[in-house]
Image 1 (cartoon, rainbow, N blue to C red):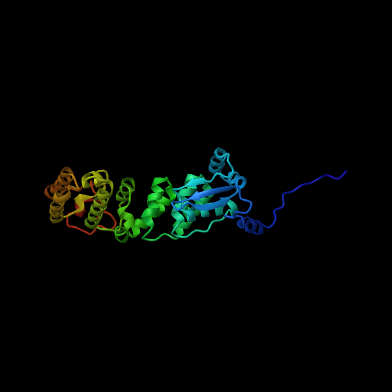
Image 2: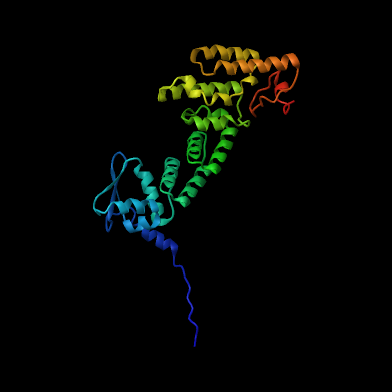
Length: 290
């Protein structure tokens, strides 16, 4: 008696995906409608496909028993939502720099790990000075460590250009704290302090906080002891206008300079960043820099 055998033999995946692509936002045979974005643009879809591909949609659609009742999604752009739909229908997605970060956000919200991976790779491969802070902010917010490290390295290599972007001024306090902890920033400390001051003033206007409140958690990341005595004096004069830096922080910087000058001893209290311009007292501040 002959033994029976069986096998799973794949057909043409390209043709299958192309056929499913014709169903994207196609009202024919659709059984669920979404009203997307502020403009409430209609997007047509199929319950069985969405619920089988995404647990978040499965839960959402299970709660909506009335087939014809549209589901309202105000917080997502239609182009972004359609990119998510495209991925769910075809396992591929069309991305560009204008929507990639928002598609990444949607992938996190909908629990689509593979789409998240695709977005992260696209963002890394197309990263530029204008968008790196926004990408870094998203990475920090969603704890995407790999993307966070990649963006930080980019920021370290192009710091002087990055601090002039709108994205830098819109960074959150936690994101700014991470950046200021880096010793690899390619910028001198004076310019970095000026950039942080501008960031604090913008945040103050937007959030209704004082400049000092806005910068309270990030100021410890500034290396004031890297400044020369004349630069510290100038900083104190600027500080009288907005109280960006607490007096005790300035006093500590003066104390460090005085100890180095009087005792001639080295100190590890402050390490130079990669872009720090050399000053006479630096060889005493950081033993790693002769």
